[in-house]
Every structure is written in structure tokens, then in C-alpha cells.
Length: 372
Image: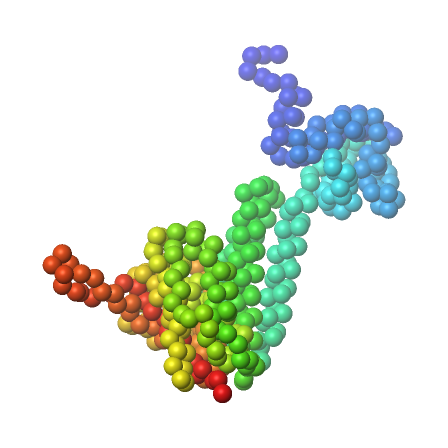
């Protein structure tokens, strides 16, 4: 062999490593005489000398017989087979191309090229399922122009990006670990957005809530416990400033509102900071306050930030823009209100003089106490 050239067999192996999962040669009886497989599709040791038909699941072998018989008589076939065995003996889906080695002499055997497309097909199914669910939401919100516009905004701002990324990965036909992780994150993001919109739509369909008398402090403790791991990831300390017993009449949705405010405070606070959840109680009202040490909310956004999709200048922060709108709606259904103030803190200089400075925001949710 001239220097610099490689053998045909070595060349074929290299092509298989780069492009497909397996190449098989069959004799005139449909038995495997030669096989090259990628490691992830390692069936070669089990196949040599056996009929290719054994790779079809028993209930699908009649179709396999037809395909092999047709190819043995000189036709080239391509298609997707949904019932093949893998090296783990679990059914897989493959893209199969087979035809005679010599079209003029089909009796000389066949070439079979196989590609495992199970992961790609599963990814496409997941995307299709979520698109279907999104379309169901479109039908649901068509009755309300406001919700329809909201959903359209969500599609443009938050859903099309992860869907495009998923589609890009799937369209390559080569979904490896990185691609699967991207698909997983994209689907999780879509799930969260759809879940948030579902809450938003549901709350806007309600005219009133069911209230119950309970200890609000117990509910607040549960919110803090739920978000504690998120705060710990940023080394943020959550400070609780409320009594152990807060007798009040409220809806279970109030927990969702407080969770949204506390989650936002953690999200916008710098690492190693502090977030405070405080409650002031008087005879008639509850004032729930969430204080953070972030960059604050500019005055221009203090009113509009509770409208959908108004996020202020929070570069790099993802979300549907509905969290604070949900808080506002829950406050309204409690005959209350929500607003944001500057978090003003006091400090002393070396001479003992006291100064004030703005350090973050205070979100205030005020509702009637409602206890008789």
C-alpha cells in the first residue's frame, strides 16, 4: 500500500465512527457476514452468522421479513423502524437503509446502514407534546382578549427562545449529552412558564377567593423553609421578623404571593446579602414586608413593575414577567394592595453621626386582617 494511504476497511471504520451507528453486510439468506458498529450500538459480536431478522421484535418480524425480501430482490429501501433490539435488549427506534451490494446480482447479498434515532424521536415527541399543550392554552384564553394578549407576549418573550434552541438541537440528528441537557433545561423552563401563566389565567378568572382563619406565621415559616436552599446557594441569609402566632383570615393563595416576593428578593440580592421577611399587625390590617439589599427599583418603575412583563432594567434575569402581576391580583382578591419602597438603612460614621442610605427595596403587601 503506498505511503499515506489507508485500507478500505480502516476507512469504513472511520466513516462509521463519525457518521452512523452500524454498517452490516448480509449474505443471500439474510445472515450477517460482516459488521462495524459504534461503541454505543455494539451489536456486532452478537450478530455475526445470525439472521438480521432477529433484531426485529417478535410481533414485528412479519414486516421485517417483507422489508428484507423486497431488498433481496434488488430494491433499495429507507425508513424508520420502531421495534429493534439494542445491545441492552430494550426496544429502540432506528433509521434503516438497505439495498443489494450489486443491483444487477442481488443474490450476492445486501448492505445495511443503521442509525439509532431513539433519543432524537423522544425529544421531538416532548417538544410536540408541549406545543400541543401550548395550543390548548391558546384555545382556553381566546375568550379573554387580555389573556390572549398576555399569552402572545409570553410566546414572543419567553417560550420561542427555548423552543428554538430545542429545535436546533433536534434538527442536527445527533443528540448527545450536551444536547440532552439543553433540551432538559429548555423543557423545564417552558414547564415553569406555562405553570405561571396557568396561575395567572386562573386568578384572573376568579371574582373571589375562599378564606379561612389560620396562623399566618406557620404559612410564612413554610415559605421560608421552601426557599432556604435557593438562598443558601447565594449565601443569602433570610431573617424572620414576625411573631410565632399571627391570627388572620386569608386565602391559601396568600402563600403564593409571599413566595413570589421572597423569591424575587433572593434573585435580585447580591451574594452574601440579607433578605428580611417582616410582618406588622394592627387591629385591622396585616402588612407583610420583604426587604432586600439589591440595586433597588427606580422610581419610574415603582408602579408599573406590578404589570405583566415590566421588569425594569434587570439584565440577565429570566422569567415570564408575571410573578409580581400574580402578587397584585392576589392582593386585589384579598381587598388589599401591594407596592414597593426604597429600603432605607441607617449607619454611623466614626464620629457616631447617624446617616441614611438606600440599599435595595421593600415590597409591601397589605391586606385586611379579617378576624372577627
